Length: 83
Image 1 (tube, rainbow, N blue to C red):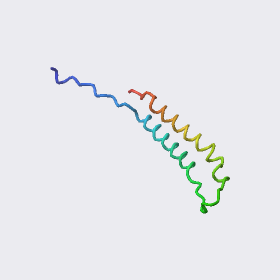
Image 2 (cartoon, rainbow, N blue to C red):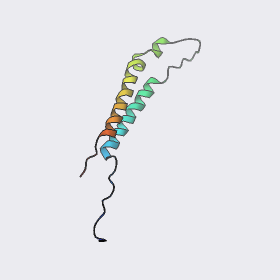
Image 3 (cartoon, rainbow, N blue to C red):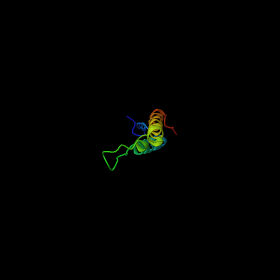
Image 4 (cartoon, rainbow, N blue to C red):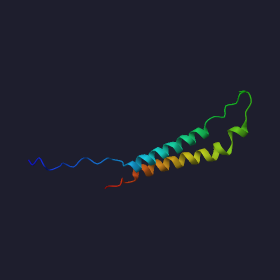
């Protein structure tokens, strides 16, 4: 066996760009879940429908969550750049 021949090292499954996209997707997901959370009334006998059914909770937060999951899928499926 020739000791001067370098063995190929196993390639990383994800590249730096993949990890950055994953981090961005997690941030978008966390923001979506944060915007959806809350709505607790100080008085449990009263129901504040304006706070519960706000545009932020009903529209913006779910869209951010879906976008975050799409970013995660793209980050996983994207092939890393080879040098």
